[in-house]
Length: 441
Image 1 (cartoon, rainbow, N blue to C red):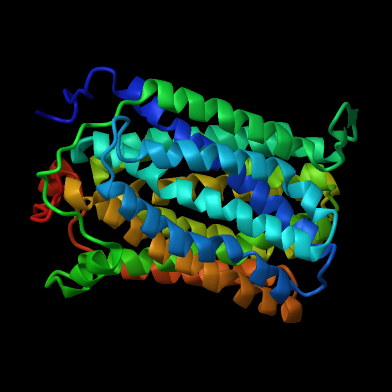
Image 2 (cartoon, helix red, strand yellow; image 1 turned 90 degrees about the vertical axis):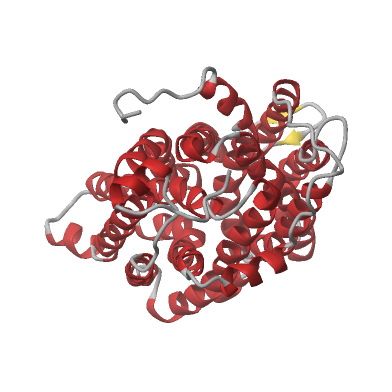
């Protein structure tokens, strides 16, 4: 069947959108957390390195919990599926703790860090089962498109969080029972939306029934060993490239809100619009990037995206110079910076929409959860290493240096990905003149 006549399965988008409700909850929490937890921490800490170190708490817990809980869910056998029991416990608990996070951030550092740890205990336990729902139910041939839809759901949530809810950080209301809601409304509303999304997810998604006679699942440690033991090192290069481009992203992400507040003079509420530009682009191009990858290949799509992000990061690094040089007003300076973030968001969506499917291509149904865990081991390790290192650079060179680090590391990840062979859909592999012998079912 040619690409022009290719048809997606009936009900593909409807069912994938329902699966994407789990990713919607992550899309609500992640941008608000990354935007404002550093701001709350800056009320207790003066050091960029210290703030960066505290911003790795969620990533350290993700590194431990995502592979562990996803592996456990691989082995689960219940009447409602193997992923859903974990989701139904962890997502509502995450919603409650997320709603009270700002109040903890306005008390003391000890209370705030305790709230961060408890919140991430549940959120990171939810993430793996939420992500693994998709490859459990979607054949490899359609996973780039499905991952695009799921990333679109996360993008919708990110847009809601950054453009609709973040400005409410500047709004002060006094509500019955709750009291003063200063700097809390975005988190409280998100908590309610997360509970609603969880109910809809449970009521619309039915997992495949599994039997006890199926082959045993691989642990994450075993999967990592198997990946590195393979004669074809493409999976290893994929993981290294993922580590590098997530390092590049996390070099700048925790400090973005602080940067736009300090250098562009925006309020806390308007600062959220910066990542909103990123989120809008991610939303708009998540599905098209999966379609593009199906035509030209996942590796080529990702490499183009990584190269473009390196260039955009260099433009961000020099942004202050060329806006001052032309005597730009604050409006023009902010507008051009947001435009760069929009371009970065397009490319980030293209890279991440297709990275999971490349790795899943190496897995079978029985190892899907384990390979999901492997992905997170490398991506979350990057998120642990990058923020404190970049924070130390910020202490010496200022906030602009985050963009130079991002540009260099993005370029390195593009070079590493050039060594990858395979990981494509069957048709993309045929057009490239080879097949992926390790393709999953």
